[in-house]
Length: 281
Image 1 (cartoon, rainbow, N blue to C red):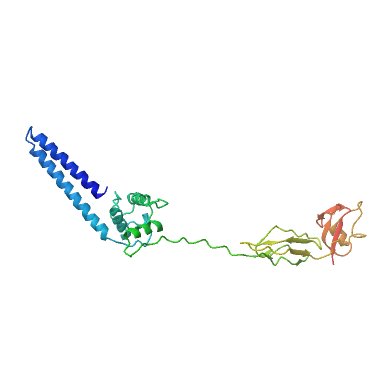
Image 2 (cartoon, helix red, strand yellow; image 1 turned 180 degrees about the horizontal axis):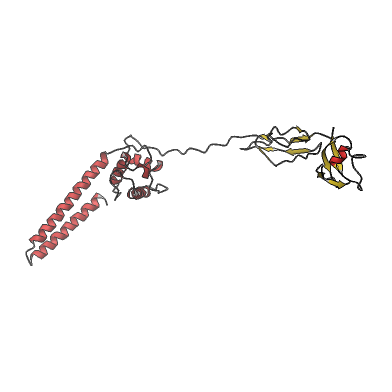
């Protein structure tokens, strides 16, 4: 309620009381009623004086709100300064006391934020609310600008680069083992390198942040693509039951790999008909 509105109501209320006294005084002695009305007029006069004093304080009081204020600020001097600003806005923070920031203060801050179209209306005094408080009550001259939002950092551009796994592997080595597929970027697939000699595995490394992909990365396995050794040749007859171990042992060598009769990779100890052995020297 503004001061002018309050003063008008006070004058009208006083007139109604006086009119009632005059009409009642014609019929009986109303000394007690007159005393009551005079007390109410004195109370109204005191309230008017308090409002005038408060407006004078609001016109001269200043404070720079340099930190956010919330429930965790309860007990600090900043809360009392906030309460003074809310009082100057004729916004009640009851039932909180001078230095307490609780639900009464939070609701009062929401009213302040709604009055000045500050979003979100959370009841927390953040940068936007502080900017408005400083605009109204700041001790510096001029308008305190709204804080400039900090832009999100632009991700750095990274090109894909083949890693140390792009190499030649011995028959017994595990791929990729301790080697990395990509020195930078990420592999586009999970490559597989067969244990058979001469086999290859390929992949590329994708970049990030708009970076380019790598060229094709290639890993190879040493040895011939055609198994050798075993019995009377590289392949034992389909009518002969044998294993890679037995076929290589017949040549005085050790089996490094074997194929079954269908050409699929098999274990050296697997016994089948018409298999093929890869023997190490």
